[in-house]
Length: 414
Figure 1 (cartoon, one colour):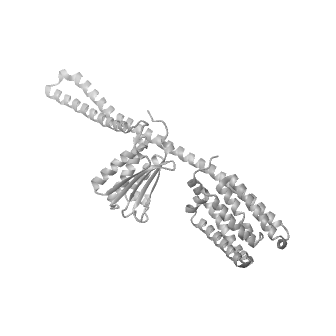
Figure 2 (cartoon, helix red, strand yellow):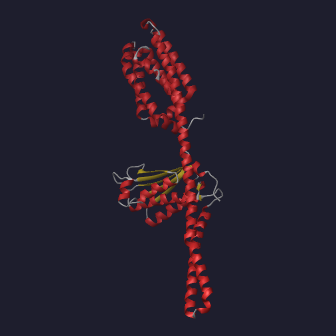
């Protein structure tokens, strides 16, 4: 099974890896005094002290900032080797029967979680060899190899457990991702079908009924034209003409909506949403006088989505821009669009006053402020994820919308 990308690995294994580093940190704190007490000579004291500092600080840094340092440990396996080297100095100095002996099981467990069977096998083998070397050095004082054999068994079991947990998490993550993509496809399909149903309702409720009324009026006029005086005849004919013009107007409105959809379509089918957002951002800046910036992430002009979905995306982004002007009193608005980790991402960032403290959707509904509520509902309607919160800089607000690309890969609807 192919390994997921590094960010997915970090998110899936973050909690377990932190627990392992927390246990390792405790074992180092307990075993360090033994290692320092048994260090011989000035050079040995400096070497063991450096190993204690590196191992302790490294474990604490991983426990505290796994999001930043975890990708480096996953990408560069040599870092695990360097950590193993310093750990071996402590193990050889403190002996395998100290707390540092139990800390050795953390290395195979981490290797299994992060690198799979091959990494777990390599680091487990190296760790067992180091345990054998440490036992050999302390054989006269330890007497029986039982504790060393027990810890070696722990190392093998830890490596197997790490790989097993890794595979289970990846399978669960793949199933969750597939379910999310399936839900997004269904939501997009529902949006397209909803657009069709809306046009069908408008045809039925407006044009069809109006034309039916025109036909009935014309039939009545034709049947009674010989018995009507000219004034009444003129009045009836005027009613038929007005009804016909109303039907023509309603037809033009529906055709204009369909024409807008056809104009948006590209060779792959859909709306060039990047170009449309850039145009709306330019118009927003011209109307409000707010400084704007458009940042396409990659080739944003090639991104196309179905018309019914694009209508929701454009409405959400437009509403976010208008909120920056009306409520946040922003002086600068930035719009970003592009592909990020298999999702179409649209972000609207401003430098305004930010969201009120304690804001929630339920309170917004009760007070009649439906702008943010509508944005969330529109996003849910097309299977997208939306985040409305603090911007990346101090203050301000960011509205981030993410829609899985796999939800947009179906064939265009005829």
